[in-house]
Image (cartoon, rainbow, N blue to C red):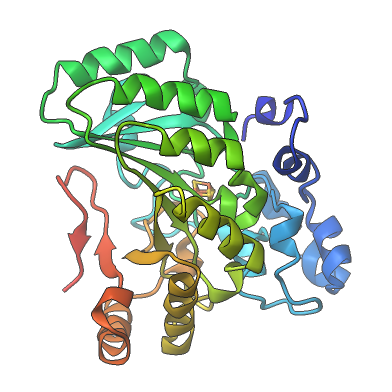
Length: 335
Ligand code: SF4
């Protein structure tokens, strides 16, 4: 994570929360009253990927519970040192999918913009945990080049802001970029892939909601929520306010061992996101990134779980179970 992301002028409550995030396992352990020796045994894994956990997210964890499903997603673990065949630093071969700095054109009709390196929370299973974000710092001239590239590829009709987390950028930066992209007549919709509102709900500011709702195309927020406990009252309230402005919400999650790989956990998750006004979209099989093998759920178990979900939930609450394969023109449903 680039430190420059945190050398920001503190302007709003979400930025203050960001600046006060836990970056040390020991500090988080103290806050959650976890056994000090248990945390110390795992602490060295910070060297592989820094720890970052905003307080509003930590507040959703159960004090004293070393197996809390939110804690396990963000606390460095000694398992991350395991070298497992088939796991690599760039499992989706993204370094070779970048046409111009910051732009990934993996799918015919849409482009992914690595809009902002770094995230508010560092998820230990992240497939971009080794991504060279410092090579993807977006400047105004980069945005001009992206618009030129899109104009030269008329099949592109959608722009997806991703990262890192695109909402780490200021409101002005996000809105300026989206105004540029949506000024191209070929762009029919935009998406923002973000986990920031889940860990700091105040990020869904009124000003940003107003600005996004005035764009000439529909805006869809694709949140990343893995467990029902992540759906806080604050998040639900902000989502409701943004939905009143006509902004759509979807959720994608990652199937994670010991976190959400039971039928009860999956049903609770999708019921909770729906109650919050968010529709389930994708359930991803883990991308095989080095350091995350201990989160993997095998395909047979994933498929069985998905079948059970289909028998227990209405179809619109069952996300599509997918895997992303390097070089494939779309996500691959598991069958
Ligand atoms: S928020 Fe998303 S991109 Fe950021 S660390 Fe978590 S999974 Fe990775």
